[in-house]
Image (cartoon, rainbow, N blue to C red; front, side):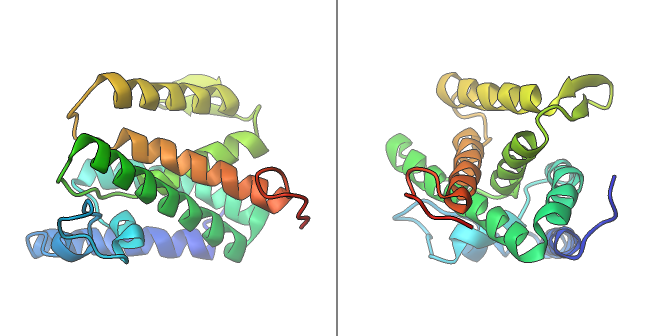
Length: 197
């Protein structure tokens, strides 16, 4: 693993610090900073702040492990500013996707977690390093491009056929979509015309 770069480190520290603060206080931050569906407790800043809240220690650990594994390398490639732009584009796209899904399903439950941003990072990692070997569950070697394809198909299956699982599967897919759109924007590819870096 590469050394931990500053933006990734700051995101890790912010997520961990906010989790323990919120847990110690009995989760009072959820009312104002979780992503609530439209017509409930929704506020515009929740499109970003939800990504700093987590529902359990395992939820936090999984997301922070992914942020460390994939975010560190991507930040070394892109540097801090571009990495941060990409991460929050994925977070925002995940939030917007979840709001649409909440409207369709009539959900009134809040969404929390950095998973949307993480899934965007996963997609970018697979596109930049498609043949890099990753140990799935720390045991099974698999190339990044196949791992991300499996994750995407799994999230789609869970989102369509497994209802009320308590996991925002479409937010994960929205994070991947936001990451893909950001990469296409940077390269000037459709739907963004002929823009060049």
